Length: 409
Image (tube, rainbow, N blue to C red; front, side):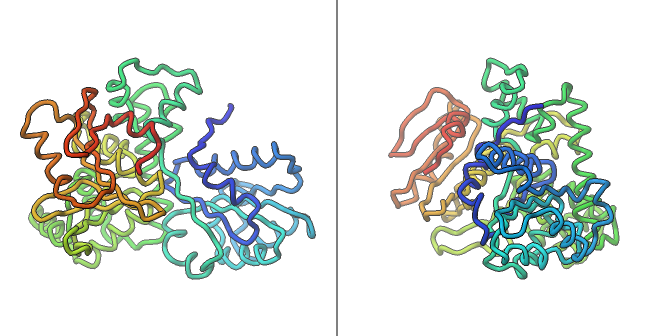
């Protein structure tokens, strides 16, 4: 089967294909397409004239590599597959399967004739161990599940039906989620089963192997609470109190550890709150967004869509896929859904709502926080409305058009 090209990510990595001094680390939630992205890079290198003998691809999850567990074994395997004194390209998938892999990949990096790409369990690669051992010698590229635009493009690529009504197609995306494999599954029940299997795989491979879960029932209660309340302001203190009300007593330390495990495995993303008057982060208060909306619907029997957190989640992931840093803004007693900052330190402010066309009260609620911000950075009210308006220099934009534009600043 031909590969649907994830150009959003390839264009970020292309400039580093031949950077032998930096290890390219591709991260992202399981099944978001990291391995397939590496295959796309291999294909591009071959199209550029790189001979297949100069490309070594190791998927350490394959049965034939199941005995490769030590650094020495990995080093021998790589050494036998490359050519000394010539340019080589090394791709290693699920690299965390080998203890001490950091010294091995860094050793080949130091030889100067190997461009190295790796993926692996996020709870390992993002735990700080890789950063400590390879400081300044790697560059991270984070992948996400399909954005709405990619979802439609992938369906078109494989000649799958796309609803002519953009809002109906958006609803399909919300209910199905953005895992690439899900697009190719025909019915919604099987799509849900697939999402459930991803959740289970993450627990078994990315969490249980690295975090001591003494009480699985408590862990799953915490996971379910955070999944069900995505987009809501959450603090450890309030979560601990709510659990105790339901008869589950858990220490603050354990609760923090379990939340950290879910974030490290990229089931959730933590979005900090930021006080715009004091210019400081608000300690202890965060919102958590899902790495894919399918997790919510796979773990619940309810198909109803609460559009407020759902649309926030979509915009949050879209901004992150555009390499923006994202936080929730507070202005006095008012809240700005998102403050976004790009790599050039430009800012944008975004309010998200399903519609502001129903009442003046709703319109005022969305515009008021943005009207209190006194700088000249872009300000957006993002809705599903197609009848758009202008107010005090704030841009009212359609959600779908906003994301398809592939720009914020």
